[in-house]
Amino acid sequence: MMSAPAGQEAAEHSGLLKFVSAVFYAGSSFLITVVNKTVLTSFRFPSYMCLGLGQMITTLVVLYAAKKRKTVQFQDFDKSVLLKIFPLPLLYLGNHITGLASTKKLSLPMFTVLRKFTILMTMILEIYVLRKTFPKRLVYSVVAIIFGAMVAASSDLAFDVEGYTFILLNDAFTAASGVYTKKKLGIEGLGKYGVLFYNSLIIVIPTLLASAFTGDLHKAVTFEDWVKATFICCFLMSCFMGFVLMYSIVLCSHYNSALTTTVVGAIKNVAVAFIGIYVGGDYLFSWTNFLGLSICMSGGLVYAYLTFNNETSGRNTEGTQELKIHIAEDLKEKYSAS
Image: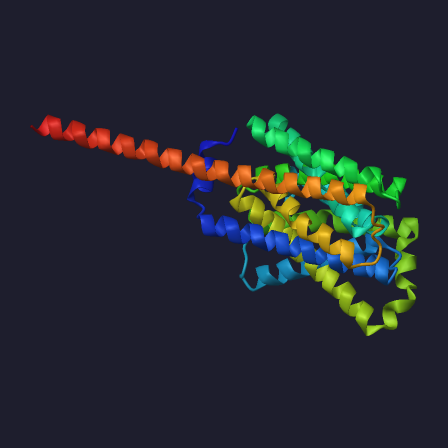
């Protein structure tokens, strides 16, 4: 259950801030999916781990420079930071690595379809971790989303066991990251920028060592397309967009709930999946798959509608109750005066 201060803070956020942060996240997520797909598939860059490493380093450089210029503020590093931020770095690392691996292994439409399981996982985590409850209509819409994803995946002619394993792990890490990010944002001293910076700082060295141990670093260094300006441009864009995506997720989670952030990602996937059918060249068409995509995306839209409609209705109900209270108080004062 949300604490009183957190609830008051959420209530103070304007609808415009919530909407803009959601659109910012959706746009960032769409762009990085396309850019990562270009780097890992079109250019056949051999190391998704090193690509994630580049995104972490970019996050550190940008936030450190901003802190030195006093553009942003967050707590200096000490022992308490580790306790405050755990287990986010582990979830962040898992989310990064499995996300990039699944992008490389799966076609763009199937990647976005299987990402729908993140909604179910987020809902389950919010029930057990944040003690939230959900109306039956929302649960039914989630069932529709999962059913559509299963129908679409059942006819995937490019089935890849490793790719499906990575994407389901990515769903779990994403859901856990969203829920725990929401919890950590309220901790004094960290804030949005501290969460981003220390997540990257804590895991960048282990990631570098892991890439060297597995041979990924050697493959990345000896990659032949480093001499091509187009590849360098796409690689640097992916690194920068990695920072932008993580910032947009934290920002959206700050102004909205973890579940709302997940729903926004699902809405974004509507555009990605159907564009991927015509763009990219790695989608193998079948009517069953297309039907599953349609059911899945329709369920996502219904889910989003019910979520935002309930929030609006809740605010209207609260406003009506406040109006009744004010009217009752005014009548009481009037009769007392007479």
